[in-house]
Image (cartoon, rainbow, N blue to C red; front, top):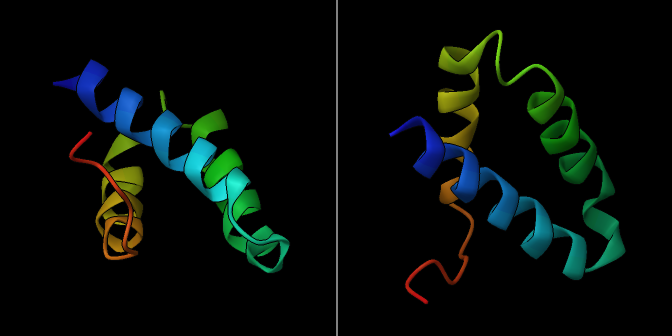
Length: 60
């Protein structure tokens, strides 16, 4: 389960990177969360749910 969440996180960061540059703040937050994902992954779960509300093609 943890690996799945990490993969989703990486996919999200890659998708956000390819999106428009005006979402730099969101991208920085994602990178910051990834840095401390190992320590505080409950908090990051909240962010994952928030970010997953953004339309992203996960079904691939």
